[in-house]
Length: 107
Image 1 (cartoon, rainbow, N blue to C red):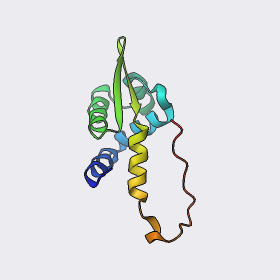
Image 2 (cartoon, rainbow, N blue to C red):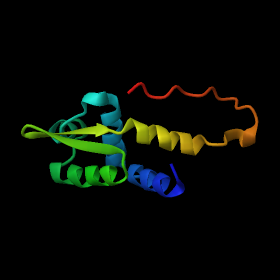
Image 3 (cartoon, rainbow, N blue to C red):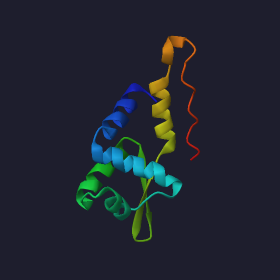
Image 4 (cartoon, rainbow, N blue to C red):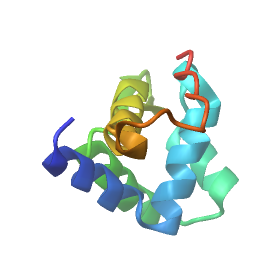
């Protein structure tokens, strides 16, 4: 990940609805969620959610897949992990880090 893609991802997550939607998709795992399920979970209007899902998709944090009459949104775990790696790159100025490294998402 480079600075430009990290800024895009961080910018996409810098809104309460987008952050909540992304976290809900992370919790849902590889099976993802429909916009209807997200609307129900988050308590936001469908049109408002669609706008925010587009921003997350533009940043590479979510994908959408048509399945029959529905669309399934999924978190892109590789992009999430790449962002976490970018943020933690060279942590502690090269000294041994006091924080234990977190395991990557199993997804």
